[in-house]
Image (tube, rainbow, N blue to C red; front, top):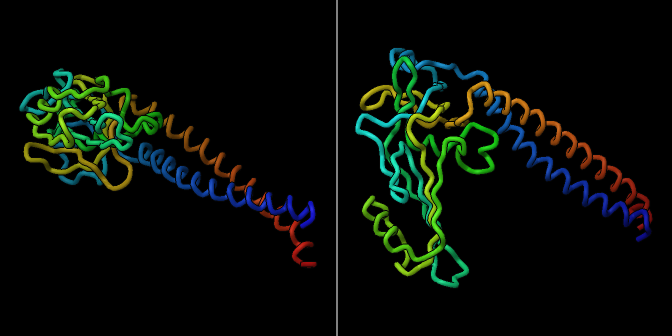
Length: 262
C-alpha cells in the first residue's frame, strides 16, 4: 500500500466516523426542532379557560405557580420539608462492591399550577419531563428543584423512613447508600406543557406523546432558548455531515489507483 492509499484509508475512516456523528447530531436536531415547535405552536391557556373549555386541544401550555392538591402539601421523606413533588434516588451496595443498585422513588400525588383565574392539576410524572434546554443536562427541571444529598453511609434510619412511605429499599441495612432527594416547593413559577384530560376533581394536565413537561423559566425565555439551541445544533449537524462526506470522498478517491492496480 503506497502513501496516498494509506492516507486515503485513514481519511475514509474519519469520514465514516464523522457521518456517524452527524447521524447522532441529526437525531438531536430533530428533538430540538420538536421542542422549539411545541413551545411556539402549543396554545397557551389560563386555568379557568382550560377548565371551562368543552373541546380542549391535544396539548396546552399553562403558566403560573406551583401549588399543592386540596389534600394539602407533601412532606419530603429525606429532608422533611413541605413540597408539592419529590423524587428520591438511592444508590446502594455492599462496602467495596463494584456494582451499585439504583432505586428511584417518586411522589404519586398530583400537584397544581395556579394563576389568577384558578388552578389545574398536574400529573406528578410530568415533573420528570422538562422543557428548558439546560435541564437536559441535569435530567430534571433545575430551576424548580431543591436538592438534599446525604453523604455515603449505611443510613438505616433513612431506609426505615422510606419504607414508611411505602418504598421498598433493596439490599442489606448495612449497605453503603448515597441518597439524594429532589423536591419542588409550593409557590414557585412554573410553565407546564401537557395533555389536558378530565381528572377526578377537575381538569388536569398529564404526559403526552412527544414533547411535554415542566420548567422554571418564563415561556418567552423557553422559546428563545429552544430557538437558539435548535439553530446551533442544526449548524453543527450540517458542518459535521459536510466534513464527513468530504473526508469520505477524498479517502475513496485516494484509494482508487491502488484498487485499479491491485
